[in-house]
Length: 236
Image 1: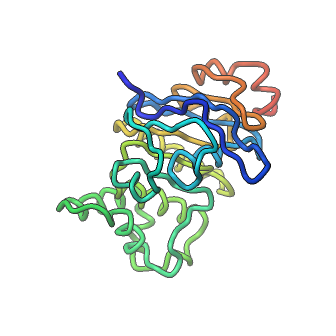
Image 2: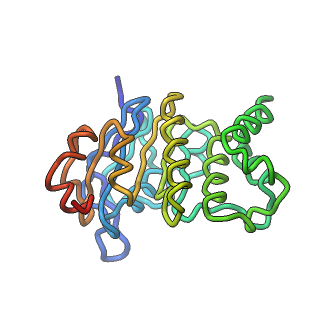
Image 3: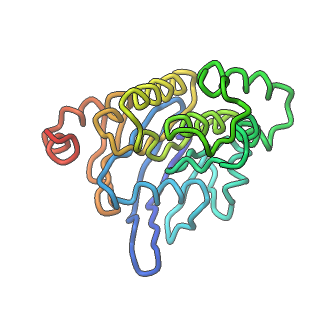
């Protein structure tokens, strides 16, 4: 079976700076895969190249067996490739309800309202405040909103960039619980996360990135118990 996502020798540069160097990575349908590494390792750049926000210098990105060359992020959302960016990227002057409906902007089916209600059941705090401006929410509530908006697009492949960054411990627990549940429902997930321990705990497989290159890969549980990973990324 072809991978849902495959990177073949992907390289990305900012001017003269080589941010990503010859990356080979794949996700099979239904997998939850974590990509971990230090700040500046190239993780966010990789996600931006996958979803059409950055043009690769060389190599290619394949989604469902087809090259994504020349396609923009808007094309990919329509095909089920959706990203929740670092920093959430919500529309601060729109209400919670309006933000969620923006996630369904490209949809033409009649199940949007039902999916809205499903998101509200997943995140009751959003339902309580559905007419509130998104910019007045806490960081954790904004992260819930960003994830809910992505779910309204009915993703087949969901890219998550640092979903727990800056959140209180209880909110971090909630976010990881939701990510696990999304994966159990059959959505393929690529998770970029600074909290390497939590990311490895919930993933099927994982890749470790350093200075733009992949330096380790394998079953997440094996990497969680790897002395090299523990010393470099888990603080043990």
